[in-house]
Image (cartoon, rainbow, N blue to C red):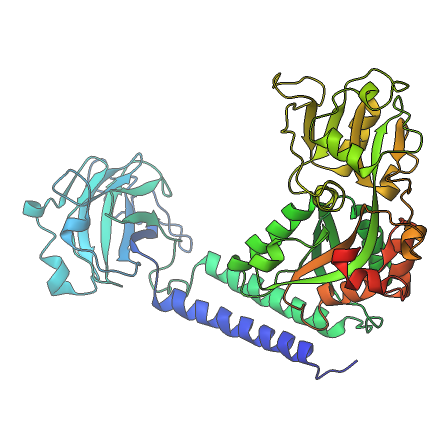
Length: 518
């Protein structure tokens, strides 16, 4: 292990910074309390009546032998202090009474009171007059609206009778934008705590957390990543037709490269590229996002920062419900007549076909599979508008045929298999083995990756799979390493296993390089 590596230096520096931050917080807590606050605490509550015995001589003290009703007399020292960050003036007391605060002595009667040890005797003593509300009645002591600078305090020595030592004592009243609160009891000479319990707990927790983090970083076993690996997170979106390939590639890469978290969220070629485009204005750096697209996207011309990498040649196919046996397939001219609404029933093509209505099961406009179909097979867009939400009930009776649009290739295959007379299109490998379907040859040529690779037929419905990123991903990033992995031998094997042709293969490279002629 390299003790002086950049990561360890950062970790130790973070620990030191955390300790300094903790000390700064302690200083701030001590020097800059939070708001206007009046605190109070009982510093003495002692019996002084004639029923109190001296523990050493076991004799009566007899302070009030001649005073009726004072046998259970007690003496209380109450400290009232400004322990907030701001000064308090007379207008800050919010009670409706002329006086500012009220001290209540539960179960006891006030017999006398004296003001003692104010911070500034001349400044504070002038306020303790009857004209300003100072006085007592029963168990309630009225305290004037005494202005207190930050840190000022005064003490009240109160003589009481009745009740027991330790009976409840509370201070009532309010402070604008502040509070009146009890403080921890203390002896007359005891200093208040340097900072609050919350500050102490936060300081200790922060220090321990940072030190623990630094220890983990330094002590961990740093094994170098295998060549070609990178850690981090990456999202792959876009083509639903190519999604099975990408999912397996992500799984294989994750097995090889620990710490790589790759999420595949496919919802259409154009939708995926649109998501990549929309992320850019909100990010100062290229987002960790790859959008796969069936064919080149027009967005690449509009967003100059998009970089497309050719990944594979994909074969697509038309599929029909198994009730429609087209034998040798369809010509391109027949396909175009079907998709512009001139063929409404299958028997119009051949009297031997079942007399079923044609149902067009299409993809949404965001689909790269649809865009390649329109460009390579129809030579135009699908002219029949969408007339149904469920592919069964035609909402627009004026349209010549029923046509619906679905969000994924798998949905298209499932609906075509379920609806008699339905026709749709799909990536070839996804259609293989799907029950309830027949694949359709075009101009006598069947969809075959091998025939496309070795130019054995002029099968038209094929296209190049692109991987789009923003600019060129940084060298060493997970995005760059994953794209490089796709073009390596393991990636090629996965692509071929799903019926696609990897652009990294020498025989396929010319097809990928000249996308317009694929």
